[in-house]
Length: 349
Ligand SMILES: C[S@@+](CC[C@H](N)C(=O)[O-])C[C@H]1O[C@@H](n2cnc3c(N)ncnc32)[C@H](O)[C@@H]1O
Image (tube, rainbow, N blue to C red; front, side, top):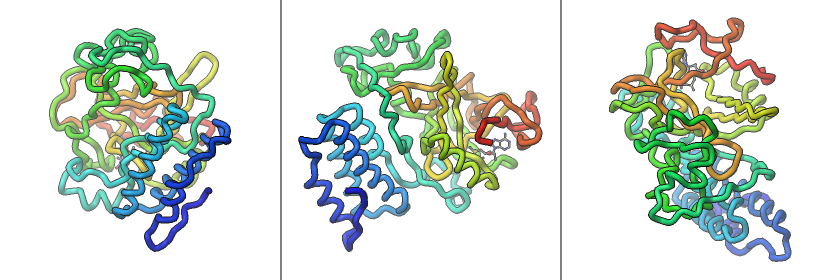
């Protein structure tokens, strides 16, 4: 089965098919995975093309999540990703986040679907699920096989450990620890969305300010959420959107001995509030890649670089390369401003 059937009820035929068809036992593990994956990609595709979601569709969305959860017994690593795909909340930007004077204009000028975890189109089949720790439910995971893999990740204030100099592995879906007690899941817990506001800036479009001060460097702010694109898809997106005023495609390069891991996240059509964070030549945030279940794609998490005052605009550096031919003028207004926004010279351009 590969297509969603539409009828009067919207999704009844497809729902029935999902409920009655479980993968045959005779199918190989790989075939089951392929079968399950194609079903759930259909659901995602359907949700993506239908921006207003009816109660029936929401029900369906929930049902599908349950089915995916049941499939955990087939392959926990794989089903974990499906559940993550399906539990992605597809809705609209929470109004509390937006300064009320710009709410209507923002919806009209920059429509996008608000999601709270990345949309992953294709799984890297070679990626293995990381092993979990064997901590007990009372453990805080401040010294477990995940938190200590490359030196302690977080300090007693739940901030990034300043002396940390290696990749960050947080506890994952295979771990035995209790989510509430675990202190090695900082990026999986609450972000700062309740403490930010989307505002209109004078010369950079929209931006994000923090409402209450943040004292400590290394405080978790949020994750850059959007569609994870392949290099080819990213290339096409760039061509399609090159005349648009704002760019939401983030390319994150990780240099690992001989290879470069490139992560492309586009928050233009699907994203969360972090898509509004502007560039600064003297930023107060930086991006840290975090591994949870699999090596790729990493979770791109924002952490503070220093203390941030109430009402200060949040910013990070979009890169280091300036090319006066391609770079747009920078309006960050800091004393260290180079005058140009960074330009990522890649083979995409
Ligand atoms: C990820 S979006 C940030 C949100 C955007 N300002 C908006 O209104 O939706 C990146 C775009 O914001 C604008 N921008 C971000 N930082 C800027 C800066 N320092 N100077 C000028 N424009 C900036 C550029 O148009 C850039 O392509």
